[in-house]
Image (tube, rainbow, N blue to C red; front, side, top):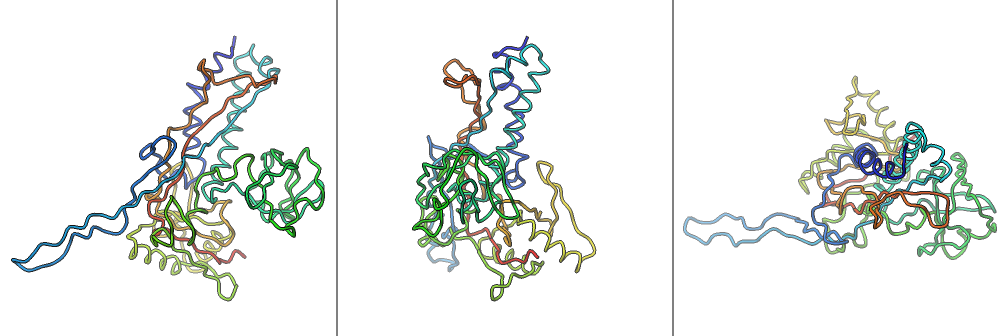
Amino acid sequence: MVTLSNADKALKEVYLGVVSDQLNLTVNPLLAKINQTTNDVWGSEIKKMAPYGINGGIGAGTETGDLPVAAQNNYEQFTLTLKNLYGKIEISDKAMRASLSSAGAFVNLLNAEMEGLVKASAFNLGRMLYSDGSGKLCSIVTNTTTTFTVSSVKNLVEGMVIDVIDGSGNVSQTVAAKRIVGIDRTNKTVTITGVTMTAEAFEPTQSTTYYLCVQGSYGKELTGLGAIFSDSGSIYGLSRSTYSWLVPYMKDISVSGTAQDINDLTIQKVLDYLTETYNSNIDFICCSAGVKRNYQEYFSTYRTNVDYMELNGGFKAISYNGIPIVSDRFIDDGTMFMLNTKEFNLHQLCDWKWLEGEDGRVIKQNLNKPTYSATLVKYADLICNQPGGQAKLTGIDES
């Protein structure tokens, strides 16, 4: 007979390794390329010495003259707080008891819950890689008493639990921890369960703009590409105005507001600049689906063959001179990133683990509820050692 102890043991000894591998390797082709390490983690922070420029102790001289003055490598310290990433499954007592008499039924129940956890975690991890860490999913354009019209639905999926926040991150008392039950992707409208709003509640004509945000996550997500690709403010505790090498290469290729096609020459110009300026060798290109189609159209017009590659995690990509080009739903329209993934590290306190109680159990009854839950956790954040060696193109045609 299956018991809670058996189930607990299965989660720790069987499911944990499988789920960890899936989340690390098969969530997203970019994440699969990024090194994950426990180095440079000190308590709840990442503290990393980042070199920049070159060693200055070189020079030419005479046969009997002075040797060059020593000038060691340049270093600055990056500091970042580890983010707390959680994934939670929940099983009702009724469902648990109904399946305890059959090992097969209980395995099916656990499998279904774990597959749902992996799917939800994959969506959010993939989204966070391209976000700015704020947790904002989109802005609210207008609302009725039951629906929102939003700026974009790229980051939304049915089942998500969201908050409404203002520009300062204050959570609305009307819409907090509410679930998305429907999305009209054509009209960009979102239906939320269990809430009635006044039509004026979140109008952007007021003094602030309102946003949808993952429940409780404002300012607590991974420091993704959205935070790295900026030319102002600070990152990793350092000011971009002081350290120009913290500013990536960013260019809008549109002409007089008209988006342009992407081609080999445009890509090669950027690659040459990054190699010559930062000795950065790009090994990964990602873009929106529309940009990828634009490039494939260029292929079909000017080339006879399209090169394909298979990446870690089983992902497939087209290739530019051996560099994979993949599309991702979370990348803004008309945008392409060119990345040297060797300069990225996901620093973590440990790999995915189950939260355990004092008794070592991972399956726990929820307080005053006929349900049991288990929570997967990882403490980590993303650092790019050389932001200046990365590139972003915008203004690319998607028609």
